[in-house]
Image (cartoon, rainbow, N blue to C red):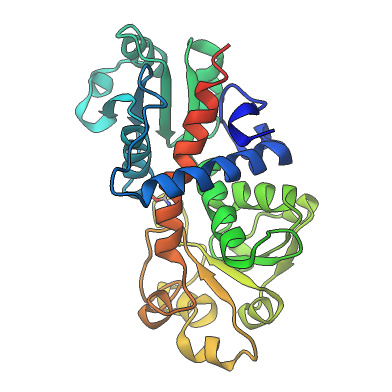
Length: 312
Ligand code: CP
């Protein structure tokens, strides 16, 4: 069966938990086709010509918002963009009322980023539209995990059997949970590494290794996914200072060169240069950070295209 003849098993994409391995492989095969389209002089296909999508962002975003918008435009969808900061939310309008008013204008699909865990699940139960979670608090960021795994697959040919260390602020990260679930469904081994205060207490129950020593994590892994310290989600001090954090958990060229092997460096962005990794690492040949961003458009095209085929 060709990728286009197969269907994704879910109507919404609220988290990686909604996808089985066959869904993820289907998304990857579809994204490969769309990546070819994106490398042509005319980067557009008519696939979603009859679909209207609203990008509803209650939190700041650069990569995810622009990437979804470009994916929608490349698929010829009609789009509207909503930013909470310039909307009637400031006048007290609820999430359900806001979205139902958007849907009254004949919108088919909502791509939503929201600071609250479970906002996408909540919305999917109360409104008549397909929902794509573009990040809900510290819970899930499914399209980020898909583009990360797709980038690993592109680099190594397969995700199965790869050792991936997710390093940094695991506690406040939606990228971490979605990556763990996605990588495990694809057969990778996953380790989380960071200070004790930034690793959730029972995370080993997910079947991940836990490491507090950065050098040990780097020696173990093929891929290091360096996460940002999410100061905006931290209500107390989880470590003495950013300087001390970067001394213990920041990746620099000296440390990378001291390993007797090559590893691939990833980062979901935005990077805090000099904190989780130095510029000479972020801009080195080991880093695939901009490949991740490039792949994000093809992955989001694939997700939107496949979900649009599952409207009932
Ligand atoms: N990776 C990511 O979600 O980046 P943005 O917050 O800029 O969308």
